Amino acid sequence: MGRRVMAQCNGDRIILLGNKGKRKSYFEKAVSESGLDYRFYSHEELDILRKNEDLSSVILKIDPPVTDSVRIDELKNFTDRYIKMLGTVSQLPVLEHFNSPDAVAALLDKKKCKQRLINENIPVTHMYDREFSCTDELLEFMVENSISQIFVKPLTGSGAAGVTAVRFSPSRNSLIAYSCAAVDNGSPVNTKKLTRYENREAKRLLDVLLSLPCITERWHVKSRCNGYSYDLRIVMQDGNADYILPRLSKGPVTNLHLNNHAEYYENLGLEDALTGEITDICRRAVRCFPGLRSVGIDVLIEKGRPYIIEMNGQGDLIYQDIFSENIIYRSQVEIMKKIFKEKEKSYE
Image (tube, rainbow, N blue to C red; front, side, top):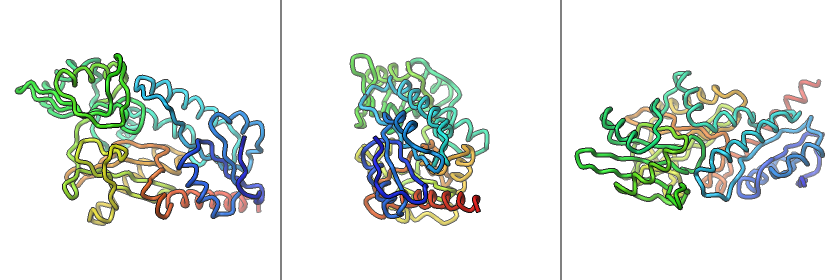
């Protein structure tokens, strides 16, 4: 059942539809400082929310669902169920969705999302226009195009699930794959631990992954800091870069849950002009998906030029932030307060 945290304030209310955990806790901490009325419902309580709430003065924020399954071949069905739920949520007669459910859904397919950015001439990491059903097809393509390194990514999913960096040297007949995926009884599973596979084991893993819907991308050479390669998680909110988190790694995958290293952006020593260019392409990318007020964008820098890797409509949980100033969630609440004020002015 929805949990009331504060007293009602002029009928305006924030509702979070999500899960228990750090996202909820630190968003609630930001809301508690604002004096706004707030309630929480789990995803399983969506029908209760629809029946019990007057939504005409509600700003609804949606957090992503979580799954206990480690099966990568279940990602598509999980995502499809989420998209169906987002479709239902989009029909709720709320005052505002903090993030448009339709826009969030549009980001869940990596290929379609990236193609929309390409159509708007926004620099993104290069996506190959070929699909591969097995390792032999992939390696043949790499040889024909003189490609020695490539990334394979499941079409849906997050947290590096199934993302695999591939190196192939035909002269040495050497195939190496770096991935958090493993093969368990013929199915791909997410181990949440980066493993190096060679030759036969690498081929076995790739054969299983490529049996699923995947995209392939160029392995860009990322900029380096203190002996680490890095990319950036940028949280864009209401047109501003509210947080930029460098993710440093010795390996090809930078996700922080893989024991990689978070840094402070100012320690990179990047020029203001480059920071401005990064912010500009992120701002342009957000405009491609109307209704997004908050989005996490992954960006790499190659030879001084920024490229968007992918976008996440719910990429606002940054531990470096919540355990410090909680800038991101406090900014979200300020955006919501602004929406309520604009509504009040329209009634005057």
